[in-house]
Amino acid sequence: MNKFVFFGGKGGVGKTTSSAAYAYHCSKEGQKTLVVSTDPAHSLCDIFQMPIGPKVITIGLNLDALEIDPALESEAYIERIKINMKETVSPVIIGEIEKQLDAASVSPGSEESAIFDKMIEIVNDYGDRYDKIIFDTAPTGHTLRLLSLPELLGGWLDKLIEKREKAVKLLQIANRDVKKPVSEDPIVSILSKRKESLEKARATLIDAAHISFVFVLNPEKMPLEETKKAVAVLEKYHIPVNDIVVNRILPDHMTDSFWQARKTLEKQYLSEIDSSFRNQRIIKIPLLDSDVSEAHIAAIAAYFNEISQ
Ligand SMILES: Nc1ncnc2c1ncn2[C@@H]1O[C@H](COP(=O)(O)OP(=O)(O)O)[C@@H](O)[C@H]1O
Ligand SMILES: [Mg+2]
Image (cartoon, rainbow, N blue to C red; front, side, top):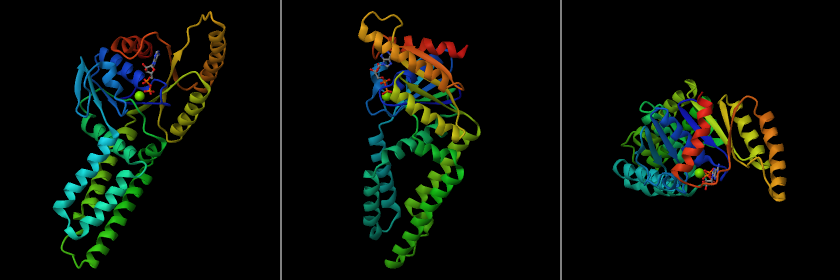
């Protein structure tokens, strides 16, 4: 698998578990590994029994972890802009900008953009320090479009910058305040910086083909349909999906008639999975009798050993 590996899939299918297990596997192989979670449920903490937070901590030999809290990130992002603004903008327009920022912070998608920004920051800042950086949540189709289509990415930010510059000029005229060049407006400068870092991350992720996606699903109808769609979208953007993790497979020999019926159904989905994902490696993980713990992760990591041989 490539350097930056994203685990995607519906809630509860086993993304955090599989990404932790894959990280564990890579670290045991001697690769310097960072596992990043954006799950607000703080599940990496529970798995590794460590206070994993917004700063990188070492949780094992060759294994570091980081947990991003989307709500906190989104708040911090807005606060940084506000502080920056107080130093650079005339007090007359501060009220106006603060209103815009507060509106932005509660708008749908603000957590998604905060996560996206953080992801970009991790790619740019930590890319060189690790052999493997594993994200336990994949960006959505919406954010992927920004990464995979350079003209869309550049165009979108250019439009935002242009809009903001016009607004600043109008406000300056209205307030007879034309002392500061528009480029010093904090929002314009933040947008320009954002464009720069997005382009840098994009170059690392896409052009160098350093990125790969793993989809996790359970052998059931809904996750299967959703995974087929997600894989098709990524293929359209030329982003490779090399691996599919089929998690929570029932034991072969069920004695009870209820579970026998479930197993029969599951077998149909498993063969549909085999035929739907012919271009992918399929990693099959059984339903285990253990739960959230390092031993559970070590047991699941064993299934990743097979793919590296
Ligand atoms: N193969 C498995 N066998 C048993 N329990 C599992 C297995 N995979 C995941 N689990 C459990 O299922 C729950 C959901 O898994 P999780 O990795 O948190 O899903 P997600 O991150 O996709 O929401 C967790 O309690 C986890 O320990
Ligand atoms: Mg999770």
